[in-house]
Length: 306
Image (cartoon, rainbow, N blue to C red):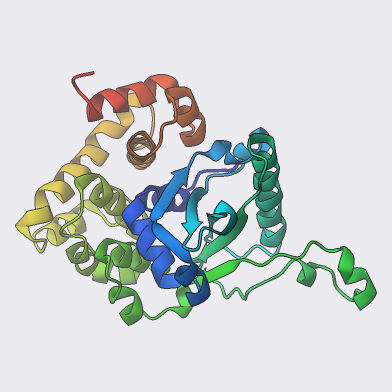
């Protein structure tokens, strides 16, 4: 069964496909040993052909490669970002499949294999502690554990990070996005803090801001009157983008047989993939779950001269 693309998947893929945002995330949340060894000037996003064709059907994650500073053996480190909005004890199995599939693809494409560092970002409402593959095997004698694949992953639980710490991030759009993700299941909090979150995003490209706007209004489920009230509190520098996004979301969705929420979500995801990847229209249509014609229309919208 293919992976269902949720509003969370769409939003996280959109923001993490931006190299500057991914860089800030890595520098802020990877262990010091890892950040100290990597040359982030070489950070490069990899296409999802990085894993097997079978895993591409279930994978909507972001993969970056980065050289080590010492260049020993020209070793690259691949940083694979997976996210969860709910606890899933079998996540180590999923991560393990990504690691071994990635290594197999490296063997097929190159003679040397490079490290893969999985990064798990969790923002669900339920408590979830770090869980290793070994934890899945209960009451197993120590002698048997040598047969369990041994790997680790980096775990970021946004629920355990204070709002103040998040807001102090250098990249204010990442701060705004993480606040939205952390409180994505708290509609009252989102309603009370939408303006605060948007203010953090005042100086970002319009396409990123639109992704955030769609996510905020989708998760907060605000009515038309409340949206209009909030818009009056927003600075003029971003008011036009907010208004045009909300109006477009409300007016255009049903034209192609989707709800306004589905349309804007798919449109935002499609825009991000067009801007940030080299995938063709068929590949993007498969990832988003829309028709090739839909992708083509969004591409024309972004580049009206083509």
